[in-house]
Image (tube, rainbow, N blue to C red):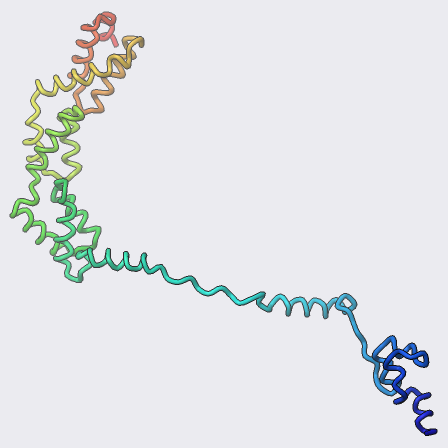
Length: 261
């Protein structure tokens, strides 16, 4: 019994008063560390703000590396878009490994709705990397069966562009050459428009533009109207003659002013 009392006084195991914060050991009741007596190391409760700066940074970095939550799952593939892509691929026979089959399909699609010259089709095949010998063979075949006809194309082109836009023979010939029509075919097609037809078309164009230039100086009107006809492919002599006649018929100034200009 004596030994028990001594151990109690020296801070060892004692009566259970200190568990309930008894009056005999108030300091030990306030801190759990005091309950173990002086023979055991006291526990230290350290706040994060009291840690050294280096340790706080390491702890913060480790916390930042941890994912905040489960990463979102990958979105499901767009099955509709994939089906459309496969459907388009199936509907394009030109993707076949046979260059001749691809060339035929390309030509047929380009010829649907509008006529094309042989040069236009050849350029399209070249862009699709069709071998030249294969392209020549396919184009020759289409020309034999009448699907490619540069002469008919040139005639239809001249008739349409002259009637709708009022282009002169010079402009028509330039457009046909740009599309690869041979020189002799261009001359034959442009010959459809004779001098009288060209002059009538020029007069119609000037008559439509006269009202837009009303109130301007005669020389200004003449310059604008002649420039308009020149851009449509009419020669300078024809343009001045038609403009002068139109202004004179409208009693807009004197004919001498136009000649001086």
